[in-house]
Image (cartoon, rainbow, N blue to C red; front, side, top):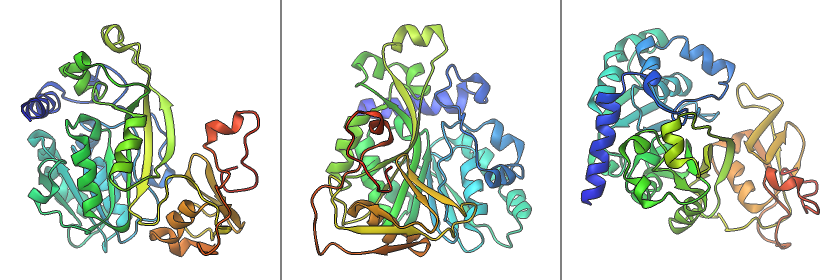
Length: 353
């Protein structure tokens, strides 16, 4: 526990005292290079400059179809993603931002009234709370109370990631979603690097080995997560490369759902899913992840897990799912996008192709 407390203190010092803006970062790990959707860029043009300049993140972890949702942003920092989500959920939705760093929250709160005025909201639909993402109960986040949890390059900074994800699945409603961007690694980080304050603050030495992440979610009752996007991280700093250059780091956006019906492999129940083309900004297609692209109006074969993801969540009103789990036809021939290049890949005709 002492190590965990020390780590959190180091992170608070790094993001509250040492860094004055994204220009002070030593690598690109905590900097987003993703192209934002046009309607997200339009919203961010209404966000105060100080919020944007002092924000750190490695992706754009806000999924579509969140109108009216209750959203929780873990490690919200200056509130960029909170305010972006605020506009997207609208006046009937609500966004809670959680961060442990006073200096970051001061920026977020300082602009709250002006942001609500710019968005045209008669009453605030955001709330910023000082606390730790490992203990959401301490800041009054109730069981089964949140539709969507987002996080932008923050969970890697936690010394107790199992507790973070346990809290996430506690507060999510049935059918709710965790959608986050973070730094992952292709191998476990050596112990001596895990204690390096600069590497930790740069979102590197706390990165989860992707297979340990898979095991962790399975342990918590979520055997199927989906990768939305993935890019390799170039360290670009000689000092950092000398320490950690042998490790492959990735910025990934990942989604998972709180669904009791998830299985540990894709199973075939003869189900199909048809995207209705009704999600704002996505009239022609909807990418669930890196190997499921739904074409509007086209019935597509799906495994039982995918059928649940689009049929038992907030996406249900945007899809027509046929079939149930009455009849089972064996494993579903579904493979990630990277596997489709392998000779003899079995995927044929489903949404994964």
